[in-house]
Length: 290
Ligand SMILES: NC(=O)c1ccc[n+]([C@@H]2O[C@H](COP(=O)([O-])OP(=O)(O)OC[C@H]3O[C@@H](n4cnc5c(N)ncnc54)[C@H](O)[C@@H]3O)[C@@H](O)[C@H]2O)c1
Image 1 (cartoon, rainbow, N blue to C red):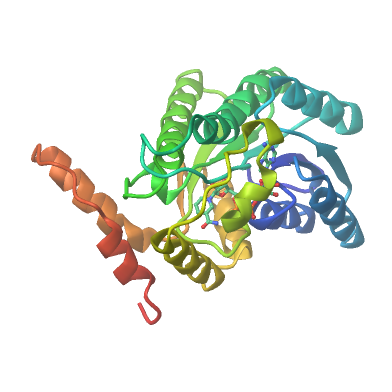
Image 2 (image 1 turned 180 degrees about the vertical axis):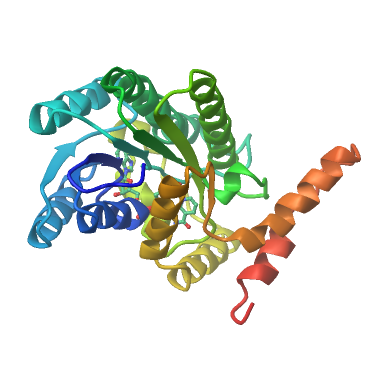
C-alpha cells in the first residue's frame, strides 16, 4: 500500500507507546483511525488528542484476549467507516520469569494478550480484507524477543516467537494466493513506552498472589526501567512501520544492529551447538555511545 489518505486503520494497544505513535502517524497520513485498547482512561485521552490533531478517530474499548471484543471491534469499524485497510495487532504485555517460575496466571495472561490477541485480529480481519479485494496490510507486533531468547520472561519470548511464526505463515499463504493483503512483523528492540507498567492492565481474575520482590528482582526492574527511559522514541518505530508498509517489507527491525545476536544464535543452530544467552551482546549494543 503506497497511498494512505482516506483509508481506514485499526490499531490495538493504541492508547500508549508504539500503538499510540502508529495511530498518530495514521492520522498525519490522512487515515481514519480506529483505536482499540483495554485501558479506557488512556484510550479516551488518546482519542481526544488525535481528534485535536484533526483526525477522524473512533475509540473502541477492546480486550484483544477476548474473541468477542475483537469481533465487536470489526463490526464497529465497518459501521463507522465501511472498510478496513490497515490492521496493526500491537497490544502486548510482559510478565513472568523462567518457564517453571512464571505462574499459571502469568502464562494465561501473556498468551491471551500477546498471542491470542494477534490470532483474534488475524482471524477476524483477514477475511474482511480479502472480501474487499483492495490493497491492505496487516502488521503484527512481535519483538526482538521473537528472534532471540534471553534469560528473561519465558511467556513473553514464547508468545513473541509464535507471533513471528504466525505472521510468516500468514505472509506465505497470502502470497501463494497472490492476495492484495500484505503482511509485516514488527520486531522492536528497546522502545521508550509504558511496557514496564504492563501489570496495570492485568485483569483481576489473573492477578498473582502478592509476593515480596527479592533485591535482585528489584535491581533488575530498575535497570529495565532505566533502559526503557533512555530508549528509542516510539515515533521512530512508527516511521519504520510506514516505510515497511510502503515497501511491502516483511521484517521491521527498529534496531537492526541487534541482528548481531540473531546471527550468533543462527550460527550456533547451523553448527548444532547449544544455545548461548545473547544478553551480553545486547547490553553492549544498548550502551550509550554505541
Ligand atoms: N517497548 C519496548 O521496548 C518493546 C520492545 C519489543 C516489543 N514491544 C511490543 O510492542 C507492543 C506495544 O507495547 P508498548 O511498548 O508500546 O507498551 P505500552 O504498555 O506503552 O502499550 C501497550 C498498550 O497495550 C494495551 N493493552 C494491554 N493489554 C491489552 C489487552 N488485553 N487488550 C487491548 N489492549 C491492551 C495497554 O493498555 C497499552 O495501552 C507490545 O506488543 C510489546 O510487546 C515493545
